[in-house]
Length: 69
Image (cartoon, rainbow, N blue to C red; front, side, top):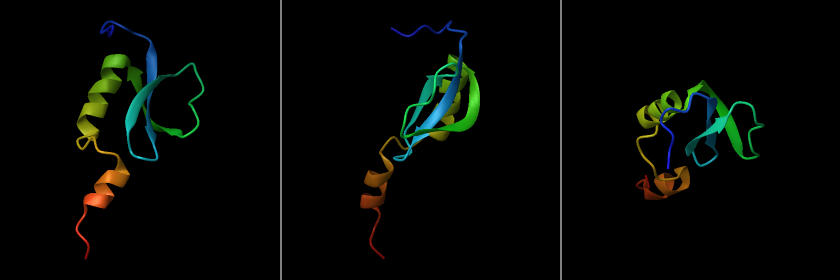
């Protein structure tokens, strides 16, 4: 399904819910997503995402689970 030998360049993008994805650098980033400043091969970008996106819940779900102070 995934081509681990893909050498095209991608940008790491994030949405308002702090969910991450990769997007081909040659295409405009879709509305609702912003570039994080990290780019590289598919495997480099996915490795970066694995490091920074440790809680896969959307930001709204994380906020809802926080105790009320």
